[in-house]
Every structure is written in C-alpha cells, then in structure tokens.
Image (cartoon, rainbow over all chains, first blue to last red; front, side):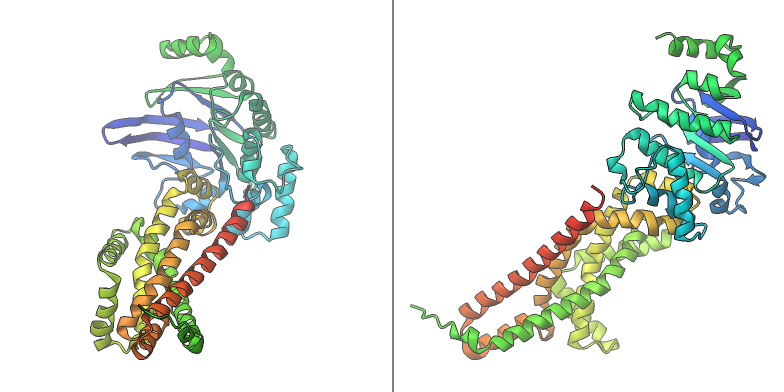
Length: 242
Length: 219
C-alpha cells in the first residue's frame, strides 16, 4: 500500500533522510520509533508530501506522491494525517472541522457531510461535542476531532505524527483507543510514537530510525525483547528503564 | 478680545451636513476599493511568485514613502493629464491607493500570524493552496487584523480632509469656504473637529461591536 524507495532528503549539508526504503502492505500498522532528530517526523511528512524529497520515490496506493505529474490534492484525499499539535481550525466547531473538507474539496452537500461527520464524532466518543469550539475541548478530545476530520475524507492510509506527545498523561489512553480501533478495522497506518507499550501491542512491525536512516526493522516481540543492533539496544535501555 | 458667534454653525448646518456626508461617501468608496487592493498586494508580498512579490513590494514601499498630500496632488495633476479622473474620483482613488498599501501590510502580517500548522492541516485534507487560503487562513487572518484595520479606516476618514487641496467637495473644503465668507474660523474649525471626532468614534464603536461578536463565537 505504501512503498518508499531510496528516499533522500537534506537541508543544505544536513542529511535528514538517507536512502530510506520501506514497504508497508495493506492493513499493516507500522510504528516509527527512535531518538529525536532521527528523521521519523520528516519521513512520515514526506508520505503525503508535506515535506518535499530530494531523490527517491514514494508510492501510495499506486500513486507516485512526489511525481510532478501527480495532482497532490487528489493524492492526499487517500492519506489522512494527524498532527502532534492537532491543528484543528479554531474558528470552526468540532463538526465544522470535520465537514469543511468533504464539502469544499469533495463537493458533498451539507446534509451528507454532517451525517457522516456526526457518525464519526459519535464513534470516537464525541457525540455531545458537535457544536463545541476547539478551545473548549481537552487535548484528548481535540485530537479525536482531528482523527475524525482525517477519516471524513475516507482515506486508505492514516499517518500519525506523535499523536499523543502533546497530551496530558490521562488523555493518552482515549486517543490510543481510537487508533487501536482503526487498526482493528484494518486501516493501513504509520505511527510515529514514543508509546512503546502501544507500539508493541498494535503494530505489525517496528521500524527503528536513527540519524536519518532505518537502523532496524522487526516484529514487535522480537524488537522489544531482542533487538539485533547495538543502536536499538541502547535506545531501548534508555526508554524502557526509567 | 474675540467675541464668539456660534450662530454661524446653526445658520450653516446644511453646509456641514452636506460636507460630512460627502466625506463619508468618499471615505466609504475609498475603503471599498482599498480592501481588495490590500488583500491582493498583501498576499503578493508573501507569494511564491517572484514577480508578484516584487510588484507588491514596490507598490507598498513607494506608497508608504510618499506623503498622502503629495500623492493626491500628483494623481490629480499628473495622472489627470491621461485619465479623466476629476477631483471626485481622483481623491477616491488617491485615498484608496494610499490606504491599500497600509492594508496590504496589515493583511500580510495577519496571514503570517496564522500558525503554519493550519495551512498544513488544510493541505493534508486535500485542499489546494487557494482553497486553504480562502476557507482556513484568510478567515483567521481577518479576525486578527480587525483592530489594526479599524485604525486604518479611521485614519482614512481623517486623511480624506486632505482631498480639499484638489478641490473635492467634502467637510474640510466646505469649512474652508465658509470661513472665507464668514471669517468665523475658531467656531467653524472647532465644530469641524467635533464632526470628524463623532464620525471616527462611531466607526470605532461599530467595529468594536463586530469584533466582540466574532470573538465570542469561538470562546
């Protein structure tokens, strides 16, 4: 479903991504983990072309994302993106946040968009928050609205860039539950996360990055119990033993 | 000792009212023209297109650097040779081109004040740059620029007094003419100042009302 081939990206002399390749089959959930500055966020942002790349190719559902001939606005309809800082539209209610793009981009009528938006918000436990503005919602609620907003475009792929890093600890669970549910429904997902327990539980594969390279790829059980590389061992000893 | 005679005000009330209405008319038309000018060149200042950015910068820098009085006279005498503007449209366009440059800067700062994540979120939902601007960025920029925009509108009403130099009929020119015939400069200019204040302060109150209503909706 997602095919990343020899992607390179640099800011001037600084290589952010070096020859990154990764295949993600349909319905797989992949966690990108690693120390900060490893290029995880940059990599996930290249998958929907929020970040340009220098060389290489990224193909999502048969569409070459960075090809100049690709209409990126159409390609992005297939790729939901959830940000660390939610990025809800503050002047719109929860429901309007969810319906604006289906209406303005897909041309759905208000009735159809609102029906679907209400379903999504309700399924994420926000059935009583349709008319609330983001400033009146907790971080966990805002992030769930952001997930509903992305799902409203009916994407084949969902990308999560540290979806719980900006949340208070007691709100992490509700957002992880929402992602867990999507995994169960067979959504193809890439999640940049520092929640190791969560990564171990729901992911099909762990991709460990450091210094802009993929250092190790493994099944969660293998990775967390017995990683092959010294770099991953060091990282895990730091994040798991505190 | 100067002996005041305020009856010059009451006797010539129609002159003041006519003048004030003309001032409002010229200001309103100038604002209506200045807003689209300001939005276009404000967006131009941060456009990816180098040419558009250059043109916008040249416009803003030149207009900001030339006194309004000089600009009005220049438009009237120099542009007036090629275009049949007359003093009425000459003053409206002069004020609009002048205010447009300042509004462009206000629009630019308003757009730049919207967090980058808003554009990214809109784009990641499949919106084109233009749609994201229209539906997500500009509505937020608009809320942020209301206070400086209000100051600009007030400034424009006051600046419209300068168009009297190119003989456009409005409050200040009417007052000048009245002083010339009545010799009651203290009374007339005091009253004129009061009228300008009433017009600008009313506008200020109206804008404050809208601002509150807009902000209340997202609190």
